[in-house]
Image (cartoon, rainbow, N blue to C red; front, side, top):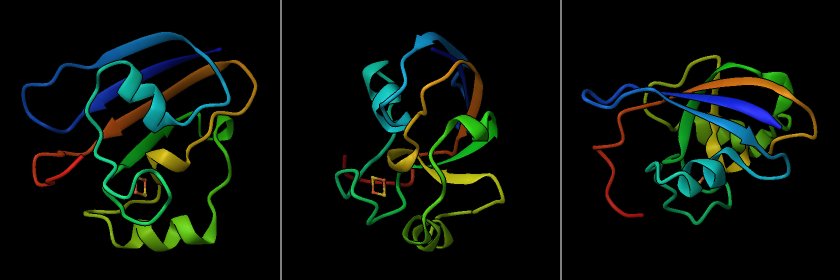
Amino acid sequence: MYSLKINFEQKGLETVTLENVAADQSLLEVLLDAGIELHHNCGAVCACSTCHLYVKKGMEHIAELSDKEEDFIDRAVSPRIESRLGCQCELKAGTGEIEVTVPDQTQFLGE
Ligand code: FES
């Protein structure tokens, strides 16, 4: 089980902390289940970059970056070294703290 802190770059959104987050699901699924909007225009199949987020802490608890994911991160807005695609961030079995920052999503249309 993880503790997940979610920060937002979009003005007016407050940091959210989720406790007891289970493994074997993606960060996209966790955020959507918590009612947090994270776009996923390709339907979570690693074919867009709208689910882009930054992993500030706990990268070791998340599935490894694939070449395909890296390709799509390159097309995201403002990619950084800690960039990941939320739909590809499967949580490994374990326990600890994860912290992410969600970029401003207001520029995206769609899901
Ligand atoms: S939803 Fe398209 S890459 Fe994650």
